Image (tube, rainbow, N blue to C red; front, side):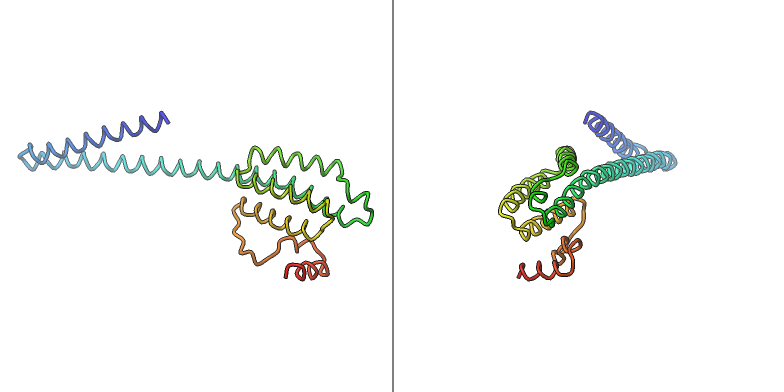
Length: 193
């Protein structure tokens, strides 16, 4: 902030100097052979300022882009933890053994904790709120034993993750259908209608 303020002050002073120099050349210098070098100096200073500003703005844009890429990379790592835990939950929910289906493995719990920790650091407020809504719905659908709700809620949260990563979804494709069998996809489509 202090750097920006000093830069702005220098630019105002330099602009004032150029205006004063140009005004002096126009109103107080009578001979044309003196005016030409003065306007040449003003032109050279303007060219130098334009070049410096262009390089400065370009460097600033490069730094912003590098930061955006770093954040996207970190978000990707965080979301990988969610995917690992979520797919393990899906495998367990499809298990025939009810005892096994109700318990998450230590690995899934660990992945989910890593996801939550990463979400606190790298997630936007919107995705954090979306996750909290998703988690409460997931707990409810697990208690009620509704696989359909688990899939639809999971699909919504996966769309939220994709939006957070910068993808724009039309809403025409159910992302969860990628991991389902053809029969399960058909059943999901019937339940959605």
